[in-house]
Image (cartoon, rainbow, N blue to C red; front, side, top):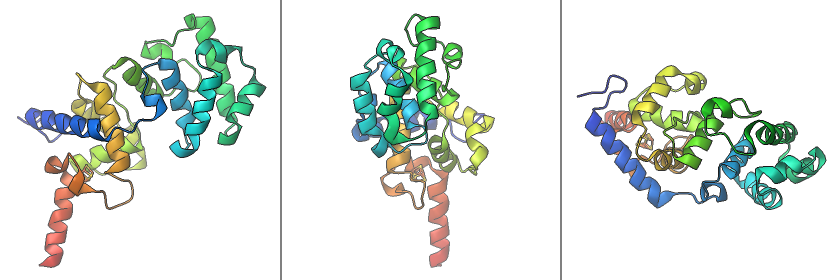
Length: 232
Ligand code: SF4
């Protein structure tokens, strides 16, 4: 029986999840912030990754964590030291956000990163995506992660047009929620992000021949039909 939300049956959804997760385990990108379940380290990484390339951010992140290994050390830092630590990434507003965020966590949450999404969203600089990423990657909570990458893969898989506004769309949100594996949300979301960066690339053509979702993908079937028509 087809799902009411997406054009796949529940057994197809199950196969999509299994294929994606087992592919993800083989192609996991082992960044330092992914080799931990410490919510502080994950939160700092998500804030630093915002509008910044991984290559540029990684060495800065590593020295930042060595200097400020937990929320208490960060809360004691002054803005000038933080600025010095993040100088090479630019975007001065990040310094203010991290400073204010650390003060709030110390004062309002007893130095613990809040588990609750509502509380996380009250922190400076924490968006819906960042709150979801922290909850999913730190505590394995079933969170839908909507960004241009996850929405691109979903749109291609289902044959839905992807626009700039799609990452705020309820339709895509529901589709990602229907696909999400509730037993292994962390593995599912890491795999989806890795697939978007390694296989289902933004620039066309994506590497469909090596994709674990190929059998169910609308985009690749459509491309195949078009190339067949072109050779007729
Ligand atoms: S088959 Fe191709 S278009 Fe479809 S999800 Fe995989 S890489 Fe993306």
